[in-house]
Image (cartoon, rainbow, N blue to C red; front, top):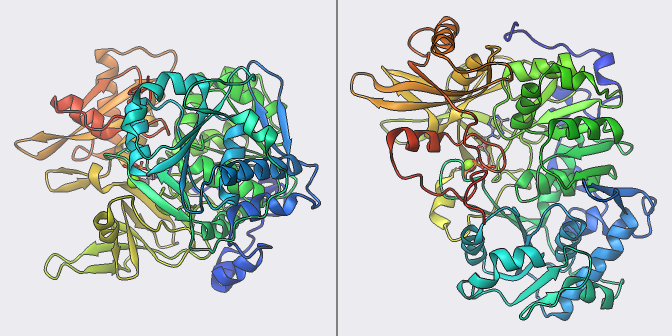
Length: 588
Ligand code: ATP
Ligand code: MG
């Protein structure tokens, strides 16, 4: 397979006229001020732009969210329902005396109440933070305390398992609202019943006035490189969500859209809740965990037209094999995007061949609040590249000058350096909770330093090299793990790869790879040697791994990112550090 080639877009690939037709021209004329005026409320309150204006509007009876579960029939919430229910929830908060700016956390699966509580809080001016429901007591308490959470919305089941015994360790917590998992009422001392409060609340609510700079959301980072950080986001971020939903996800009003991320991660909020509501589309929300057949069935039966997912999910679908895919068809699917980790060229091509559509990788972070660099419908895809900066986003590659310590912008294409973004887009984070110094260090003059290394080619495409923390220094070379992992994943036996630098007295660090295998392959010495040879041929001896180990699966964050720091700690017998976000770990 030729991973260096370009996927040219044809009219047939696009299916509908994309929102972004002329990339260069739109970039030249775009301003955030003009974009803000496209939102009826001027982007001052997320809840107003996403739901309130639909109470009596044209979308009133249209399905906003369709919830799927393995055990119950689908449940639809219309834009009108959402508006009324969020008003009720905002009234619940007002009655409890929860003031503007106070914090509410939600710990729940992807159930309707999560969405209602989240948007209702924003109506009340309450700052909201959704937590991933599989967190155990300790990671919950750490975040609740860091965020000075006053109200917690969770289920009776989760409360009894993860909160009740630990409640004294969370002194800021004043109210706990419980959703009954069996649809009845809850009756647990020291808590309030969500359903009863909602039933008693009025459906009329006047949104608490907010400005674009008022705090709206707290999002914790994935914890891939260390202790998760709490990023502060404001209501004005809604303008970025709108623009990126339009240009990077190409949302059109008649789309059936599925974002597979959990709202406990920023993608599940920015693009699982806010952006689709802004564009008036119908969103699919699956309450279950990943399962290849289930996911294909959802794409098929729900007639999903725009799908936003993650490289891990795509690689798991690839691992499930072509036979599984062949049982389904998705004629309505027209645009597929991915985020969270580098998307190896093999996976982009897999999309083209198996789904009939290339996968559009895009890049952003919890800190940026929205998509910054993307493969859009408007230009050809270079598989392995994360695309080009969206209209309104100025990205560059920088290097720290060793003598002056100053940051230099590198104009020369194809030069490795740190990816930086020029301030000015509305959804940039406004701080890390309790860590002002770390926040300040992210900025030099007008540049935000992302901590990721990348290069820009002569056509303006950006190529991810690795996180600054993961870069391997071997015999004078700087090696990005992604390059090595991509090469390994080109081999038919390899499903996933994670690459680390292992201290070596001769060459500084030696490249070591951990791989998991596709169906139908078993680990053996012969396969190990074959993979070493394959990598050497593709990468050259200096960059290819010297050691390869087989793992049944790689350690990942719950948001699906390979935790290289854990591979390294385990390899070296060092402490594992914070594992609160490790998939399958630290939960109760
Ligand atoms: P922490 O900051 O706690 O270590 P994290 O950086 O993984 O965790 P997120 O904000 O969820 O937390 O992830 C953003 C990071 O994910 C980016 O900085 C980048 O390293 C990686 N990433 C996201 N999208 C892409 C992409 N398309 N290609 C390559 N890397 C990506
Ligand atoms: Mg990060």
